[in-house]
Amino acid sequence: MTYELEKLNNIIYSDLDKLTNKTNRLKPDDIDYWVSTIDTEVKRIKKAFIEVAFGTENEKQIERYMSHHQVDLIRLTDRLLHYLGGDESLKMNDRSNDPLGTQLLKHAYGFLDDLINYLENHFSRFFNLDASVPRSYKLIAIRDFKEKLECIDDLSHARNLDDHLLNVITSPLRRLIRSKEEELTFRKLIYFKRLVLELENYFKTESREKEQVQDLFCAMIYMNFNSYKFFAYCTEFIKSQYQNKETLTDQLDNLALTSKMINQTQQKPGVAYKPERQPIKRTLIAWIDEEIAFLEKRHQLTFNMSMPQVDPGKDFKLNTSLSVAQLAYFVRVLIEEKVLINSNQREVLKFFAQFTRTKKAENVSAESLRTRYYNIDTSTKEAVKDITIKLLNNIRKKT
Amino acid sequence: MSQKQQVDINIKIDLVNLSSSVNGSSELSKEKMKTSLTVSQIAYLAKLLFDAELIAPDNKSEVLTRITNSLVTKNATQISIKSLKAKFYSPDPATKLSVKKLLQNLLDEIEVYN
Image (cartoon, rainbow over all chains, first blue to last red; front, top):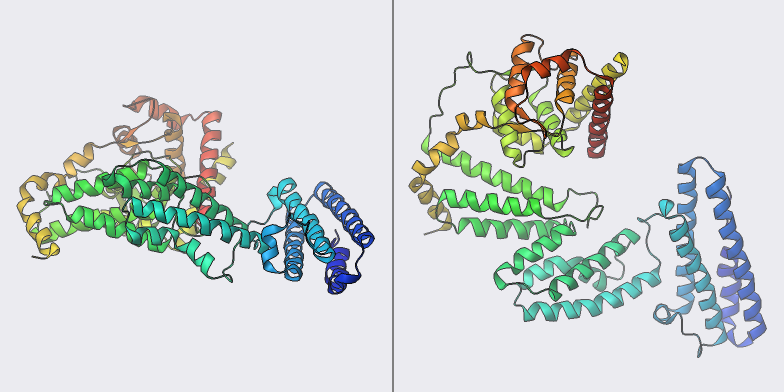
C-alpha cells in the first residue's frame, strides 16, 4: 500500500503553479501535454485503488488508505481553486473564453473531481462522509441554498408562518451562507440538501392554517432535525398548547395525543442533523413523558392522596438481583429491541415498578424507574452488558 | 390571573374525575405486557434468568403463573401454564438458537448506546 498522489502533488504544487504564473508563454501544445500527463496519472491512480481494494484483506487498512487519499485529493482541488480564484468554481465547465492557463487549471480540476467521484461511487463503503467537502462544492452549495432560501422565505411569508420557527429551522443553512469558514462535511452537505428538499415539498403541499405548524414539525421529525433550538421551540409550543386546556384531564389528554402523534411520525432511517445526538423524536417523547409524570406527581402532592394500601404479603413480586438502574436499562433495551411492544412505555415502567422487588428496594417507585430509564450511567450499561454476556454464555454451555 | 394559577385551580376542579385514573393500581394490575416473543422463547428466557440467579430461585411455579397472567404474545392472548412449564423444562434447540440471537441483538443495542 503506497501513497499514490506524489506525482499529482508535484504537478499541482510545482509545475502548474509555475506554468500558470507565466500564462502568456503557454502554448496549446503545452496544454495537450499536461492534460495527457494528468489523465495518464489519474488512470494509474484509479488502477492502484482497485488493486488495494481487491488485494487487501484488512478492511480497516483499506478504509484508512481511501480516507487519506480522499482528504489529500480534496486538498489538491482546493489548491487548484486557489490558483483559479473562488468565483471560477461556479463556471468550471465553461472554458471557451478563458486564457490558456485557466483552461489548463480547469482541465486539471476536472480530472481531480472525477477521481473524487470515482472514490465516492466505487468505494462508497470506505468513503469518509465526515471529511470536509472540496471548497468548490461548498461555494456551489452556498449559491444554491441562497437561491432556495429566498424562495422558501417568500412562501413562508405568504403562509403567515411564524418567522421565529422558520429561522430556527433554517439557521444552520443561514449560518453556512453567512460564515464561509464554517466547516462543511459530505454528511452535512447531504443532510442540508435533503432538508431544503423537504422544506420545498412542505411549502408546495397545501396545509390548513391550523395544522401547518404540526405539519412542519412532522417534516422536521422525519428529517430528524435534532437541533437544541428546534427542541426548545417544540417544547415551548407543546407547553403552550396543553396549558391552554382548562382541566388537568384535558391537559393530560392533550399531552397524550401529542405524544401519540410524534410516536406515529416516521423518521427517515440513517438521517440526522447531529448524528451524535439522540433523535428528536426520542427527546420529545421523553420530554412529554416527564411533563405527564410531573403533572400527575404534583396532583398527588397537592391533595395528599392516599393510595390504596396493598398488602405485600398477598401481592406477588418478582425478586430480582438487578438494581433499579439495571432493571430500568434492561427494560429500555427490551423496548428498543421491540421485545416488549406495548405502545405506552410509561405503563410498562409502572408494571415493572409494581411487580418487582430488588435486593435494596422492597417497593420500586415508578418515578425512580422512569428517571433511571432516561439517565443511564456507564457502570449500569456495563453491568447489563455483562449480564447479557453471562446469559449468552449459559446458552453456549448448554448447547 | 397567571397561567400557573389557572392550572392549579383547574387541578382542584377535576380531582373527582381523576382519582380513579391516578390511583389506578388495580386497573394496572389487569394490564398485560405485549411481547414479540413466542411462548417457547419466554419459557427459555425465564429459565436463563433463573439459572443466572437474576430472578430469585424460590417459588418458580408462582413466577411462571405470574408470567402467564401478565404477558400476551402475538399468537396467544392467554398463555397456558401447562404449556409454559413444559417449554420451561424442555427447551428445543430452535428456541435456544432464537433466544441466543435475541440476546446478541440486545448486546448490539447496548453497544450502540455506548
